[in-house]
Length: 364
Image 1 (tube, rainbow, N blue to C red):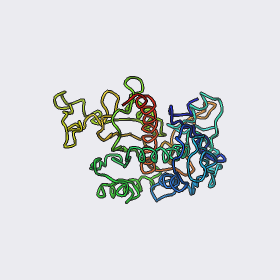
Image 2 (image 1 turned 135 degrees about the horizontal axis):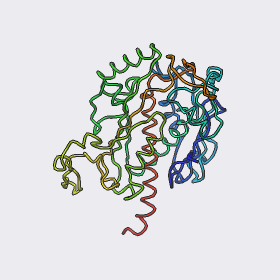
Image 3 (image 1 turned 90 degrees about the vertical axis):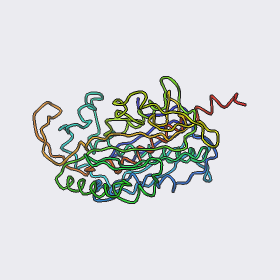
Image 4 (image 1 turned 60 degrees about the vertical axis):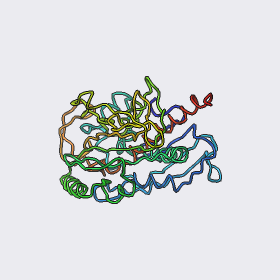
């Protein structure tokens, strides 16, 4: 029913924004991986609300509990269940939304599909659901790093019309985490923080672009037809709340180039490895990783729930207005960075296991 993602490394998330808690069940994780709650908590802390003046003021520790699948610090190969309990809930803030649809939100579509919905804070459609993804992504990152040295770094590339200049080949997590907007171009970051804070005070919201790079991805990951690596990456990141666009490599900018200008020419490096002189393919050719850095971008719309009065209708079709209450991010981009990283990690980890399962059995 759309709550499960992946093939061999498979996750199922559960929970609603103001319910008892949210979490994930991970199936297919290899046994004997050393993992601690602290490693998972590190990623959850990057995603949690209440981090700064430019995020939602909701205060949640988002403390993770590993309920199963880990024993004496190592994975068992059995399902891993991780729970985060909701603590700082204020469902009364959303009572008006029980009957009144928020513009550009999932209220009306959930009613159209199910005929029932949890209207408290968006319920299942809330970005709080991504806690399970980020927790599972922490484990996927650990596998990728340990097995292949894969490094995944996401960062804010653009807020509204403020675009940062960042080298995906050299950017580091430490640089990303040096400011509250998670943009390693510090001059651009200052302008981004200023415009987000101003928009927050105006009870409005902003969108932008998260860029993500995965370095040291093994050659050969990906399937050549329906499960092309870029197709699965697109599905993964486009399943995130508020995502509206996906690009990889040159993306839409490549459409104005000729084939001669766009093609990535091959050469052999000093170690005899086949490389490409440029990376307009974004690290994937024919749906399969070619060993170059995978560089992708995800567009996020402005947060749908805003404090300004808007025209809308009730569930019975009556015209009305709504100025939403509750606690919401004026811009989802800073907290979306670990979410994008998590989905990239989940896709790459799944394809790593699939590749090893199919292609390593008979290799000499």
